[in-house]
Length: 318
Image 1: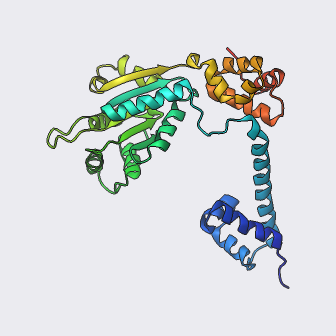
Image 2: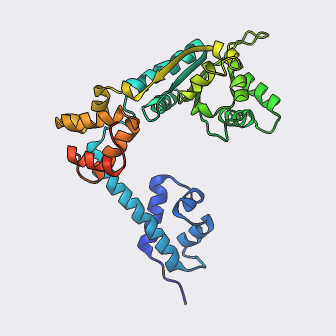
Image 3: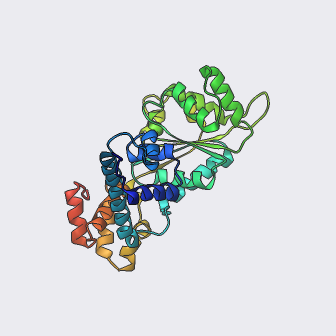
């Protein structure tokens, strides 16, 4: 007995692959099954339970449709462009440029969720060939793992010792106009920091210039260098060209207008003021954006709607 296939669903699979520009190998895990299963299904040769597989495909497309509907509904309430220039993100952008041009190290630190990473991401998008962006994690914080991440970003072969890897990275960077941006830099261990700080110096033999290094993180990144461990960080500290602290209190009313243009257009000053308060609290811009987006999905961006959403999310102005 031949198996029955939903031809309309098969056609939608083909349309999905074409619209997204995905290969079968990349699309299959996204949809929740193996490339082989997807291949056989597309050719009506699936040996397993066709009905069960099609239920998975229908569930996948249902989630896709709901997400698209949610995005479309929220579209009129959000800024047109992906990147919203705020006072903090733009200042971070300029600092990274300064770091690139002047060589040396800059420390960009402060409260979470206020636009530091947004500024760095915009810089990388604008300067893809002259910037290297790494987001550190606790597991990346060791010297060996950081070297591996940088080697991968610079397309340097990784199968070598730490010394060979460090020398190859230095050779790859020397004489270039690259800037290395390390986000969440508070995770970097001392040995990792000591290694990368030397890359800002000119090569004493060849005279080739070093590169700029921008460390972005919470304030621990900077206080570790000037607090109780200052002696241990003396060499590193001496290479810092500039450090710039940022706090939620620096988020301006103009930033709020840029982030939530629909409120400004409608003259919803009370609502904008409420979100400004969240921006300047420990929740930062990220917290205010989350409250606003959830209120949009709830179809209520009045003051009451925003207030109730913030309360339900456990976010308050403190």
